[in-house]
Image 1: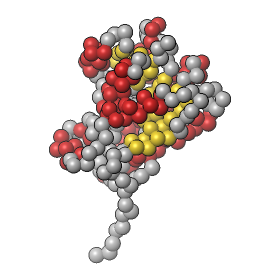
Image 2: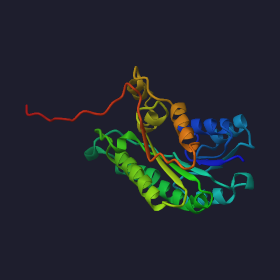
Image 3: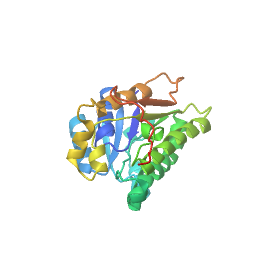
Image 4: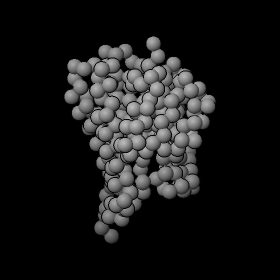
Length: 250
């Protein structure tokens, strides 16, 4: 019997690659995102029998609930929630950061994620399903300018562990995926569309791709149901942990 995965942020990067990977493995996909033209393109490519588009902003709970309530019967039984939607905004240190950008990151990376999870938990428990949350290595290794983005991802990692603890005995699996450098639209969004900054960051680094992470998501999802990966941290070989900063007297 075909299983169904609900993927947020499916219009680019990890989410878009995950839609392709899961459909290729025989899953049905509820693909969500704000850019409905990209969702429609996924349906056109992969088929309306495999992908159901649900266009909404994850921060808009009313629109989200309406989309979930309108799921056709073939897609209504959710076996897996992939909380992928998230973003980083700005690279300035905290004392020069834009507070509005901080609030947008918290609303998207934290509030929307926990709200959607809460909404779908009863169904996931009933089906002994799974939750995979997209965190980041920024949850563990701080860097200058990471401030609220890193803090929001640390929340996601800890929330995942808390869910795992609370769902003990239900059969529901919970995993936090924590990627390092991956070349997607991430840096373009963070820098307000600065292609040069994105190119400079990834040049010569052999970063991971959306497809790499999608394969990790699929691997975790298709493990035998008695196995749970609590946390999975993954980096490209050319990236490693940040060094300590030292401010020296002149």
